[in-house]
Image (cartoon, rainbow, N blue to C red):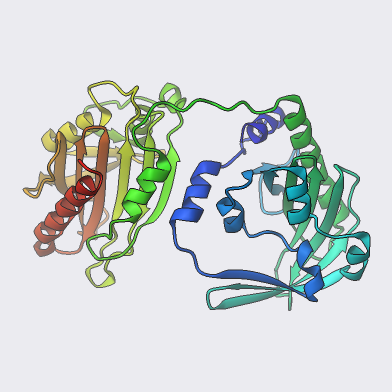
Length: 402
């Protein structure tokens, strides 16, 4: 990740690395539809791109993914290079990602792919392209839909082996256009990444002490069905410690500012989960669990948040990444409150004309906080739903040993 972000900074572009740890947790903790990509003829399979979920699940290799726009261009489908870097022993990468010889390249100058995910299948044609001289081995290709539909884009790819690093880059292209400029653009980014990795190898940072890792927190949430019996789709991460320095403070006690809240929790483990809910009841349950880092001091951020929800007659919410706040109206407390050192349970509405009842229930026990949100259509559903949410929060605490 550090290598990617350093190259992004040097190119003065706003893109960079994704959170590799979070991607790995998401790939391993969640259940995904069966996915296969099969080459025809079968001998061309070594030239097929590896599945992103399989890459993330592979505990034997380190990986990082990112995106960078072509130098001097604004980001867009045909100007943004997507890439994955894998790191492992050279022989492991050679046999996994570059298990071919020149004769195979000649025989597989063009072949077909069938990608199947669940019950859906798509077919593509792959044509190899002249590859630039970079690293120890490299090959390039362009992939197009078969049959091609109007407006369909193709995908140019470049794969590079350089010592203990394997790079897989891709760029959307116009299928009938000249592919070599796209390949050279990817090669330029590949060279920058390899140069940065060789010149400034990333250092291993020491994590902030925490009683629960993101992986452990994800396993805890995954092990407990939601009130409707469904399993959560989880996204887990370590909240960046540097977020505290860049997050703006809340302007008033009755403003809930996500950026400020998460910034105050830098170094903590966090899991966000979504549950399928009940279409008949128009239910959509979301969860946020945070295991606070040992460095977080009192008053704890959650306690301040809970106090505002218990005492404010109205709330302005600033959603992470949003430029405008949104007001909570008809805010009132509920009696179904989970047990904890600090807790809240409220219902409110938005001024969107739907009249939907938004429920928010949360509690802290020790260093662990659990917050859940749900939506109901009618007033009659509010109290039973709140009781179910409070019981759910208590169940998570009990499962965690608190």
